[in-house]
Length: 256
Image (cartoon, rainbow, N blue to C red; front, side, top):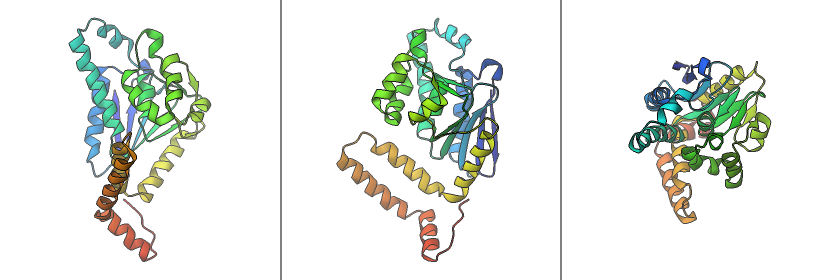
């Protein structure tokens, strides 16, 4: 269901259920979480690209999986929901740069996967939607993350209407970063990732992402205190010492 390839510090996770439009079920979500956990501290991985085989990126929850949920007890459904929460939380707090490469449909949970990546690149044909309300369900877990990314008003618009957005309209919402032609997206995303491998410090990225998570929704005074603490912490890292030395010596640094 999930393929993993690591090359030149770039890990590519591929959703591999094209016959099901890469729809998520509990087994697929568990495999995806397992790969993310394995990459957290893998020194051979600095960037993670999430993409998919087939016409769709991820069409949301698998229909057979949804039918199964109808027979679950509340306790069973809560346990299953907590597992999905763990997947989204792991992706949101992932210490390395994450990139979603989206073609076709990114609906419901699939849209959630894209939302939680640091960068999202899409083809002109890509479609984005939180369609849960159209089937009597709710986009519960992702609602926590969507508002801070695109603003509460636009988040309400997406979550409460279940409307399908084109790649162009999603770009205007700031949910995606750039649109590439279908024939070019693979090479463009790879080039973007390769540039990041060489141009940014892994330790700096990890600390910056942690800081952004911790200051979210805190009062200004606490935000500034946290920022000062992280500033001091960053100065002690080997990457910072190496980077400053290179800057002072007017040397171009190439990270690996």
